[in-house]
Every structure is written in structure tokens, then in C-alpha cells.
Length: 115
Image 1: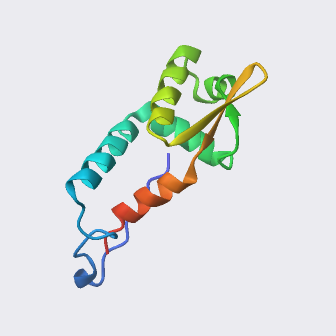
Image 2: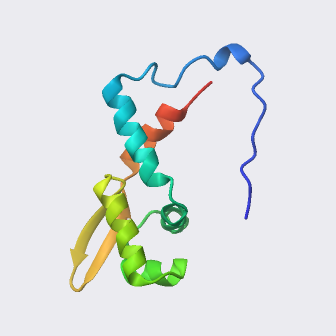
């Protein structure tokens, strides 16, 4: 496992607010709910597998093989990620395909951008 490199903040005045400015109550509630969905290790593993594959379409069976968990467990976590709007779910024949919705992740990156 690789650890993200944390670079020192050289200009402390740059670390004074979130990237989008102060959040109102509704925004704070919305982002807290999204981060709560992401605060599950298996969901982060699923997302990392999707990202490693270029965020392209992946079936439940493919994810089951990649992550090494049972199909019902993977389906449960995919459902939570989809309900939160982080993934898109489509049926293609007999398979259910999931894709990352990059727009929401870009929004979360902006919210977390400090300094």
C-alpha cells in the first residue's frame, strides 16, 4: 500500500478557508452525508478498483472478483454509492454495470481544497 505524500504548507495565509468559501447548513449536511457514505473501507476499495480501471464500466461480478468479497456484500455497497450519486447503475442484458460519476467527485475535491 502506498501512502499519499503530504507536502508542507509554505504559505500559511493560503490556508484560511475551504475552496468554495463557508458552507451553509444545507451544503454542510449534503457533504457530510456524502463523506459518511465514503467513510466505509470496502466502498473506498471499490472506488479505487473502479479508478484503477479508468473509471469505466464494471459489472458486479467483475468487482466481486477484484475485491474478493461476496456478491451480496459488493451489491450492498454499490447500492449505497449509487444512492448517494457517486456511481451510475445501468443494466446491459443480464449484467448490472456501474460507472463512476466524476462530476460529484470534482465537487468534493473543490470542497476539500484548503490552501
